[in-house]
Length: 142
View 1 (tube, rainbow, N blue to C red):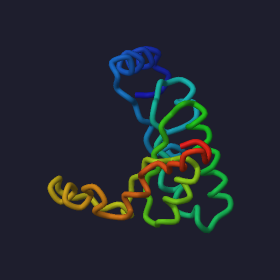
View 2 (cartoon, rainbow, N blue to C red; view 1 turned 90 degrees about the horizontal axis):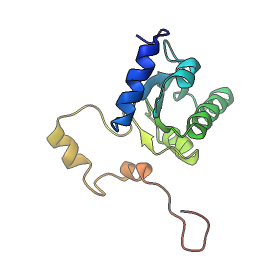
View 3 (cartoon, rainbow, N blue to C red; view 1 turned 45 degrees about the vertical axis):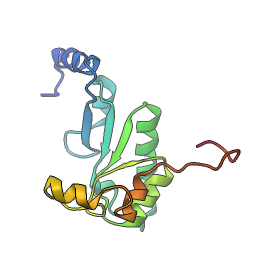
C-alpha cells in the first residue's frame, strides 16, 4: 500500500485535514522506515518494542532510542513507546519527554469494565508515569 503511490499521499493528507492523526506503527522494523516519515503525513511515531527491551542494559539501544525520540519530537510528532514491561524502561523514555506508552507494565489486554476499575484516578501508582512532570512555580518550565 505504501510503495510509491502518489494518490496515497493525497488521500492521507485529506484524512489528516479531517482531524485524524495517523500513526506509523512499529517504527524501525519491517516496512516502517524513514522514507515514510519523509513522504507521508504521520502525526504519531510508535517506537517498536525491539528498541525498548534493552534500554536499561545496552548503551547502543539507549542511544538508538534517544535518536528515534529526538527525531520524532523534532518533526512535531507524538512519540509512543511500545512494549514497555519494566519501570526503568518507562522512566528512561519519560526522561526523554515521552508520555505515551503501551505495554504489560501498565496492564495486559482486559475488558473495558476491568480497565476502568483498575485505572481510575490514582488507582495504580504506575499511572503516574504517564503524567507530565510539573515544575514548582518559579522553578523552570512545567
